[in-house]
Image (cartoon, rainbow, N blue to C red):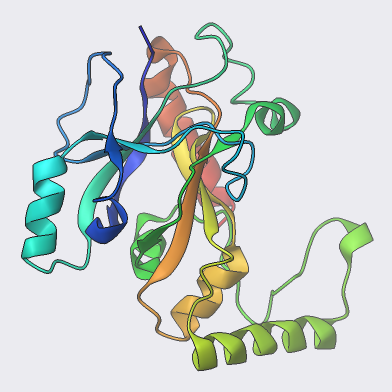
Length: 231
């Protein structure tokens, strides 16, 4: 029996991205009441589909069909995953080096409104032209003029061509303390998309594991506090 873990947030995704998914064959009890649940596969990197497993629909086939018939742009979806780590391994979701060792990705790219992500406050920092590409690591230091120019070029490209689906943002499920989803990669693309008033961008999901059940109530409070310090 598999141990299903769930995202801390509900994401509104394009139902057309979900309709072609096969139904999941996992028999574990689904412990949430959400109408539509996307179960991401185990893929070492999202663009490599040869050595991983596909995303599936854990619940909600009829709801997805109905949304498409009604021409809904987005529908609420809970994201689920099955950890590759032991259920007793509560260190891997907490420690950066271990997280990246066990991290896996969804097999597909989905579409979402970036303004929804901003409203959820799951970004670890907000990128603007003023702080673009300003990293704390001195090895990656870039002159201010060059940083502004890089941001401006990305904005010009997005205004001209729209969001490039080849570069989806990465939302990592239960990233902070094994309980809180956060935007893991793509803060600049997020900032530029919002600056350009773009309401449809590409997203992939990644995960490692989840904190033990008895620690989640406390960790959720701590995770929200730690996330607020980064914003």
